[in-house]
Length: 145
Image (cartoon, rainbow, N blue to C red; front, side):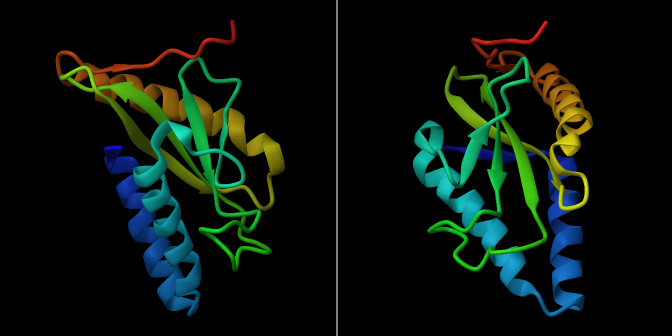
């Protein structure tokens, strides 16, 4: 599957890379990159434990998960608990793509991390799609009101 990285996510990935390098925790950045690779390989078939749906989103949104440990992230037994939100969209050719939008650390926030980041991811996804004719976010079947 084609995975597109939103500029907001690109900046977050660059910051994460620098933080991991400064703290000698390159394994964390490597695990995040492994998650992105498995998304490219598996596409819409990717599921737990690497990815789970964000059921409160109006879009077909999922979160890549650094924890719990998985085949892609075998060393992810503890913090940081990172999430990478992505939405499935149609590109200008009608193909389904994954748009990586927002990343973050939910270690100290738990599930309260999701609402503001979900809202930001929806806004950025809509803006990204609006920038080119034919792109659109795929709406979730169980949308919130």
